[in-house]
Length: 367
Image 1 (tube, helix red, strand yellow):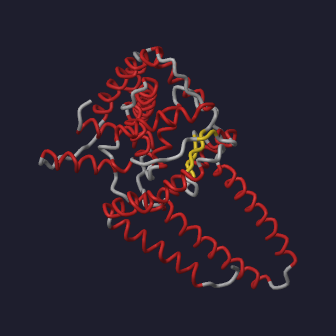
Image 2 (image 1 turned 90 degrees about the vertical axis):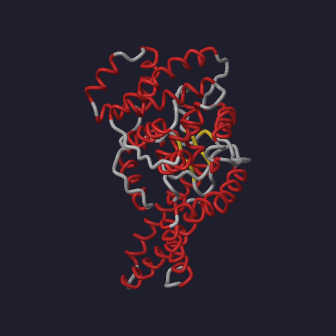
Image 3 (image 1 turned 135 degrees about the horizontal axis):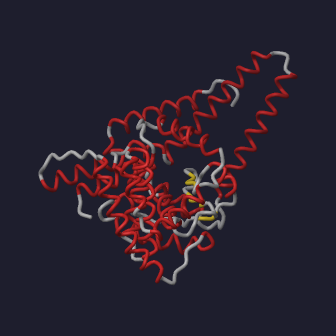
């Protein structure tokens, strides 16, 4: 492993070749890779690890971190003892290259090419233009965001009353129940988005929630096991949406704004009123954050008149998010660079991306 080898480099070149093809042929990537090859792998991995009650991905992450620490310590010790530093560094270089090439290839096979499918916004516009024989383009401005805000507030008030009457209680202690109900939402919208069909394992409560809090994570999707690990501190009002969001990753959705969009649709099309409310409330949170950033005048006027009960539930989510540690900024910087390496070069923050995607949907289809 610690010398030049052809096979790892060959795997790296194959990975680059696949990325080039996927970037050029988005529709073919979704048709062949996401919907067939990768779907088969994702379903098998998810169902295999579903028999284990805790997130294997959490364990693997801890083991991986432990191995890195061990390797660094070993490297320092050997570097002090070795007489031929250049030979040692040469072997180390090829060891890193070989391991990285293999891991890169595995990532491409199990998930990576999903970043190179056609963006959902373009899919929605193409469907609309094909159905009505038009050539419409969608540009979202603050007026449209305010319109969507008012719609979400009305729906949140309506569904909150129904949610309070529901006897079902959702928490991270009964994630199997939450997952099964969330799966119903995906079945409801899979006619419009066939990519979301499939049989996948349930979400699991994380064994490292304090770490999730430190890095500002509501949950994790592990590519290698196709598991969902949920932060135990997620409030009940937010939980159905968060579980639905990470279930989108299980289904091959790579872009975060699209995962949130699908989660929103899965929630509001669910028969359970608590899921409906969670969907409207969470989408409202994204829109409010976007207005706060892009249009403070409208934001101030709207937030003053917001229903007190809706505001209280939003404050519950905000209080939970205030527990995020200073690792959140480190995570955000890493994810920004990771997305760009995967071809997602958008510069807007995630709140704006989600808001504009929902607004684009309602620009094309009825509320």
